[in-house]
Amino acid sequence: MQLSTTLHLRRWLYAACAMVLLLAGAAAAVEDNRVIAVIVPAQANLAPDVHPDELGLIFWRKKLYATHGQALHPVNLHSEHPLRLKFSQQVLHSTPRSQVSYWNGLYFHGVQPPYTVQSEEAMIRYVAETDGAIGYIDACHVDERIKPLFWLTPSKLTSELPALRCDNSNQ
Image 1 (cartoon, rainbow, N blue to C red):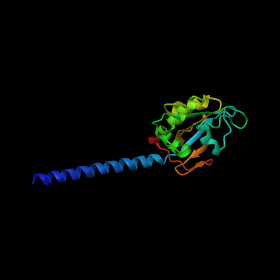
Image 2: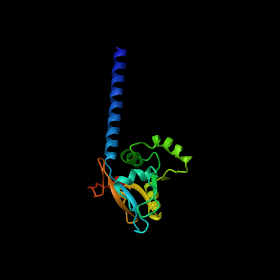
Image 3: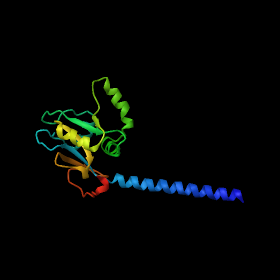
Image 4: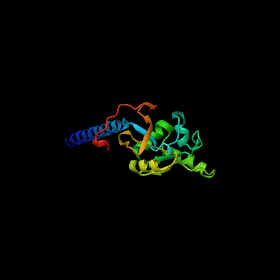
């Protein structure tokens, strides 16, 4: 009788764990629906001229200058930030962890990875104040200090503003 109770308890515990994992996955899926704004400084003389097809090249540091000769300064969120992971997967087709060996290899050629900041507010400040800077934030956090060039939705990179669902929980 005690063995039967132990088996039922284990099954219930496994089912509860599975439910928690499913709920966590659902919460992550909701997080993945956020739109990312690719941003540059709001001041026209600081903002680089960038084409959507160049975005990956800029963050891989394969394109260092805009068409009119302005130096480009890409900036990333820290490697554990959910927006960094989403941006890396959709634009660079890799993860921050898998990029380490790439940057280690380029180090001896004098090529540095993009500058890294710890928060979206730090990203906004850096981009707003740096000539030629380009970064990314949650689209709901765009303000007058920066200007969005592109929007990264779960399915594509576009220059047209998609429908945004911003609430206090995203801010």
